[in-house]
Image (cartoon, rainbow, N blue to C red):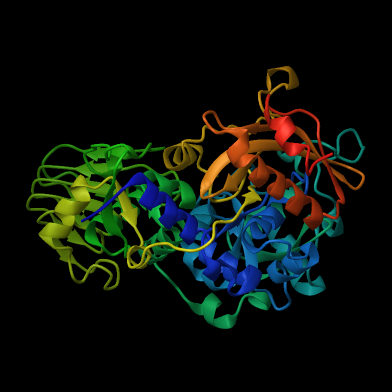
Length: 502
């Protein structure tokens, strides 16, 4: 097992995220997307939309039109789907989200009940070609005969139907027009070989775990769960993939990071929506929970037989199918097995070679996981100095942000104005491999306005003012501004900024 200092882990993370070293620019925007695995979308636009800011932070002043074309190129190089949140994803990852599409199909519900006419919507897209919500009656529900203008919970039936068809993979969004999704048949825009690839839930989660691990560099289990938003049996699959080595990540101990929480199996960490337990000898549970994203765990004990579902089998239980932890003399068929269980089937070969006892022992005592390639060479090169989007994968997990950078961060746009500390859309400032301060930006014509600018406690203006100034001026030039104005700054910081900021 590798021991890392907190600084070593931070530098590995910055390199993995494309914010340290020259390699980050290779491949342009799509190369960046493949490295990050996912770029989160958000409707808010201050200096630019978040998916543009993510590219800017790593690649510098790439034209915003260039960024958009790289994401929404024809033929499609990316698509939108649910990862950490609504994200732009490399189109080559299409088949890896089959587990989530199946879960949505089985639930037939997410935020709304699926309307009855959804099949007619699908045929309309098939016949007419790509559509937006405006082509099928609008996004909002009408009230008293007036066009709708509510929030997402007031979606029209047509919007609900299109979104559900996107959730289950019948439709796909590979571009936007005026920030409206353009929906088209998956078979028309996703390469045929990807559409034909039929991966099991286990294969999907394992391969996505590897992608998340590479993108994060060094990560706790919770970081990986947050990146992929896994719950229930999918989280159990991730746990076993980590412990067996199938995820391709290696256990590490990072000094200063919290110890790994002790829990009795992955099922105990999940919050089940439903659960069933076979307690008595000979009891049988068939297809116990199992399908949706937040599904529960099932425990079979004392000779019970369990078929399907997310489960823990103990003391002689027999388990067939599902993602599971089997212990003692349990027999497991088609699932995931740990500590002495007999295994038949499994993940299509992913667990054909079980982890060594040494690997499992290291995993049990480690507090994080790392991409082994990231450990091969010491991170070197120039750090980026840049503003960072609140929805950037470097900081989208606020607990991880505080753990890695010592930076307590809250986006205050939903905080009442009189209670805000740092501002409406506060963006952290990255310099020298650290988050050194924060700025609440706005635009006034061709002037970039820093409504509030501050350094982190313990940092001096004499040391860091130039980095703040550089970050502001570079961002200004990128969005077409020719001046920078600071309205409010920490005491002592304003004087150091006057040389380059009016």
